[in-house]
Amino acid sequence: MTKELDKPGFSLPPVKKEAGADKITAQNWSKRIKLSILGISPGTITVSTIFHVCLLITPIFVLGHNELLDLSWGFSLFSFSEAITDTMTLIFLVCAAFFLLRRIFLARLRAISSFYDYVVLFLAIMPFLTGFLAYHHLFDYRTVMILHMLFGELMLMAIPFTKLVHMIFFFLNRFVIVNEHTLGKGSRVYA
Amino acid sequence: MAEPNIATLNSEQDVDVNEIKAVLDAHRAKMKLSLKVCAHCSLCAESCFLYTNTNDPKYMPSHKFINSIGKLYKKKGNIDRAGLEEIGDIVFNRCVLCTRCYCPFGIDIPNMIALGRQICRSQGIFRQYDVE
Image (cartoon, rainbow over all chains, first blue to last red; front, side, top):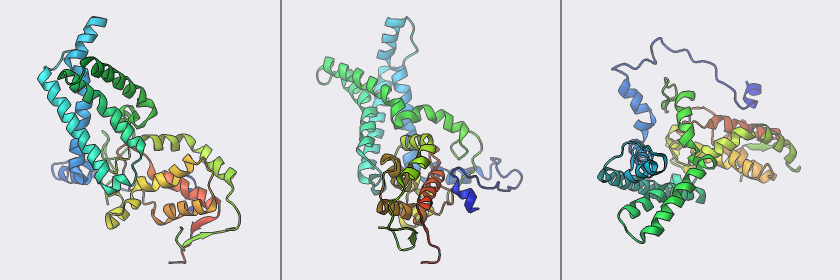
């Protein structure tokens, strides 16, 4: 056993399971959720989900972006009304503030946080904050608009080189790795 | 400092940096990716029974991983014996390799801790089971 453990990447022997134990039934689905990451920290995961949905959907369906797409390429997607986009941006900023405060005030996060974490959060927030300011014509419109474009480009460029790479890996994780977040059947449980 | 139950052979000698570097190079890609993907979100905390029993951040799987393999990777293997003994304390005393830790991004933390143990063992640093 020691020999095997010496090599990283050792695999544990397969565990025998009762037939149908993995099946999601009316009896065990609530237990499965309780054991999943959603059941362990429901607040964080809920905020995180809202944060990510707003982050992905808002820029695609915002009116201004589609207007620019139409001007340059001659096609555009449908857009949400400005009121919806405005609300979604506000929700996003509130969720982002939650993440920032969490990182500042929770001891367990402070223990592993570095300057880099704040930089990445800053990169994710700034395109939305400047977009929000530009829409409401707060501060000098031209400057805010240029900042909006620059921060948007910076964030997109940072994706492959920082932890923002989970934007891409998310989709692989959900199929490749077996746990409670995958689209396959989960096998890991909390203690 | 390392706890007394971390034994160290040849304690007078310096660690063989080239040997450590060879192991690190062999697993470089996976280490680099794991360290880059870690979002420092601390969602792995509750999956470690050592953390849930102590509520001490130093028992978080991510904390253990960042301060052992992460430290070795950042220093590119250039570490002295005292530093490696500290890492030995983390990988042998703060983790039992039960492989139940959970990462939302799918980082294989037990694998990384096992790699840390392999490096420590290669330099004569290991857990002494007959000492409390």
